[in-house]
Length: 261
Image (cartoon, rainbow, N blue to C red; front, side):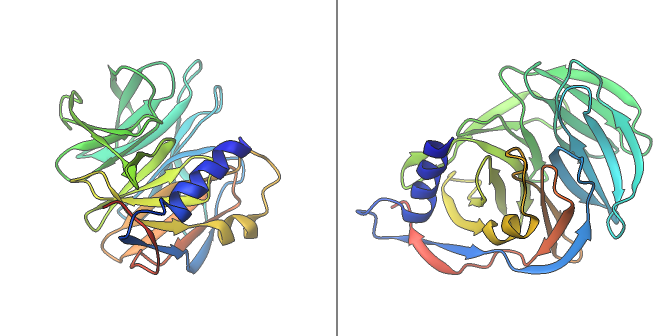
């Protein structure tokens, strides 16, 4: 694990010495702090109509929740039963689409009542979901993002994510913000900003200060969960087993780091 963290830090913060171009990197700036269920093993997060929607993981404890932002109160919840390990979620129309980790199975739920409407299947693992308004975008822990037809959920194409010409692995929770795909890199404090046309990382948000303020004692309590309130331009981030959810300023560039040619 230490080797993984060192490698990711080297790629994201140092880059390759022979790359002359640079991309913005910035530390997250906290706007507001909200309560969050410290027992929630956060896997997916999105914001809709004034509420947060959150999926949690771990076999026997997986769920999908509608949560009041200001209080952290669970307004509605449905269990994702064993043996499934719940993963990412996204809303499309009047449905919620959810993934599971290693069972190659996803589910459709009604947005208003969390009634299970059906299931679908995919090869490999399921990690996270977001949407660009045309396709549903899926991560699976590899450097490739899958673009799915939002109606049939069949894969249309894949996009490789790179920084300094190298593939970026451990891509986890996703959110589409201002024409970019934001992605937590699992087991790090970094959110990368991905150009959805090229797959190139065009910026990095550093959540180190947020993680330190939470002071996690569990090694699993890493940053994970990004939600975007487009109407009010609010960006929310949290983590697995974190007692708080942060609103941070949307990305707008900062100091530079080497980037791909």
